[in-house]
Image (cartoon, rainbow, N blue to C red; front, side, top):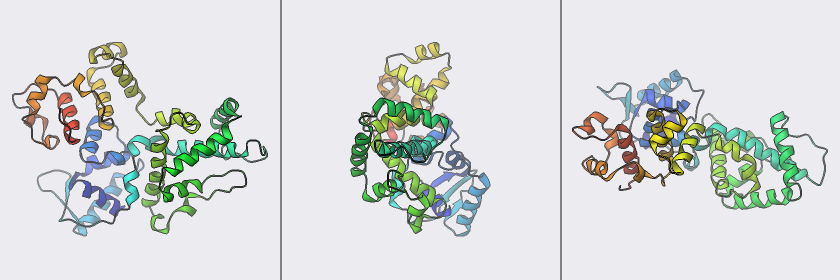
Length: 336
């Protein structure tokens, strides 16, 4: 765990331990999400929901003893890198996106494995033990097979071929070898893991990276049966209330109208819109940030997210919500 934590410090040389902990366990507040976004740590949001705060503190103290990080005097709970320690971080870590896929990662993969098993046996044999026995999964599968029985086998094969061809050989082989089907006994994830990644947390991170990259490619193909089968579960990764607010905003409703129709406070809607802006470069900033407000932002430092709101505000009139939206674009290197 120490190497992983040190790798997070290399993304931003100074981190606050209390907020880092809330980020890793997935405490979904705008404050924590903003911290994750502006410190390039959003892909790791909610990566270790069962982590104990003392475990994180133990890692920080061990890294301190090894003189790789140090407490920052005068800044409570802040730690910083000492020099530029080199950490051998595996390339696969760049494929990780717990913010987008972590909440339902395992459930989606179980459904995909189940669909592959059922489609592979279709038309060949019905004498096999389903890898899932949950009434929910069984009912969902029966309905889907009934709808697509004549084409399911070939479609799933063709779609997996397309998806795997878009991945690295390592990624595709790792996932494909875990499938169970007609005359095919899949290997366990532990059997497939390289010996280099069989210890915590790298065992979890590697598996997640392989799945997340597959899901990213799958989302590019909404016409695929594989996508249609798991789409409701993939969508459940997102804040459903925030998704409703986003849909209404895209249909043209104003902030005031959405609040009135939904019976929510402006602050709640602001949180929903920020969650959207964090991950979508096409967010319609122009509908909220007026030319007058943007003129005030031109005087701010290029890394304004590192400054307290009150210090930036001065005699200006922009709101904290407007500032955060501007900073998101600023962090992306986009002009308003």
